[in-house]
Image 1 (cartoon, rainbow, N blue to C red):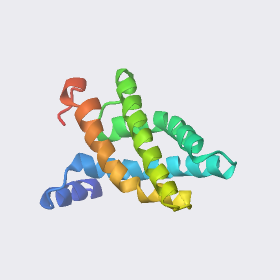
Image 2: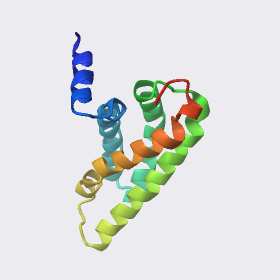
Image 3: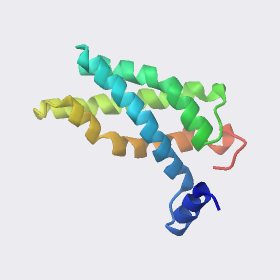
Image 4: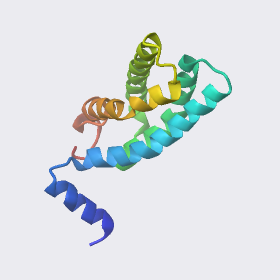
Length: 142
């Protein structure tokens, strides 16, 4: 039994959704990419709204292929518009979170952004599974 099969078995024993575990794994890669983009745009002096926007734009194509291909076994380009829609929604959620932090005078935008990564991942996975990569949009069982 290879290590991937062992991980699947462990997930099964722990009653964890294998797709969600893969989503988290791929999400770590996507998050590192997205956070580095956000940090770069913030570092060069962009306001957090623009830094977040550009980080999302740069990351969407990368994330579509990794999330669709690895997690949901479907990177059909016809789903890209829905995928963009989810990212648009998550962008608005993220900006709202950062604005609330700003209003509460939590001025470390790097930390503020990092605090919301996991909760936003859970929201994003649920929306992706239900509205983008659902049974209607893929030949693979979800």
